[in-house]
Image 1 (cartoon, rainbow, N blue to C red):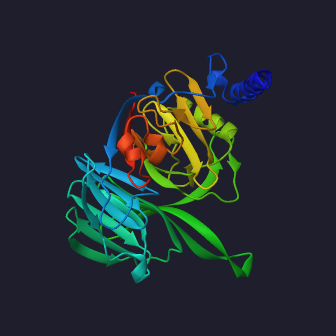
Image 2: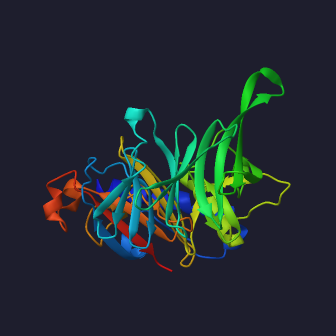
Length: 355
């Protein structure tokens, strides 16, 4: 069995190593390391545990869109926008009227940290502004011909959104096509500019038939769209291309914007995929300083708090400088034994990547 495992590892190293060296000529003379296992401490400067208090509206699970502003911590859990402090104390629930009983759900939210406000978009196309205490300040109807809003961020005084619109097929007037665009909006949701999006791998310029936007992020060039893809060989190829450029290569006004397959940080390029139902996924991380690519099927081993492997990294800011992950139950047994007995007593772990 041991010989078989070693043989498989050798094949993985040879396969990924061969593909990597084929991609970008500038890297052929460098030693690109491919790793199929790794510890969290290899890429992380520190990890801060936040034991979350159970709110009065129910347990915390399926957490997404975790955002921090000073001592304030926000996250979406089961169609609730929850507000904690960094010690894990539950403060309040924002936008309580957006719930399943009213037939509404939270599509997205962003923080305006300058004004200490949360902007929440619901399924009825309203964008409501709340202060951090949960008081409603204003509500605006999004009067756009959007079929679906796919991502939203607040950056540099503007709202940035990606949305799909149904447009008539010029070749077949009985059918429609999906038009995907990146929009720059003012705080009243008036359009300032828009750019068409295309699904493409930037290095080899391969086109995908469909690629949804998962997040909007920010590079030194500006705002760009990110989507998870599942082919780690393509991730490696495009990451090396972007690393060679030293920035996300945004196009000029006359060309379409690409949807990129990685989240770019100062040093690390990450793409993570995790399916909680099947407990499968991948973690891809490229260290631009050490020219090392982590291509992990089970994630990084948590050697800080011994919670097992971490594959579900979620960015906490649009610059990809901080990430987080959630653990509960038996995964907390070694460092949080009092919480390990209760699956409904999770700990949020905030990690700062090495510079």
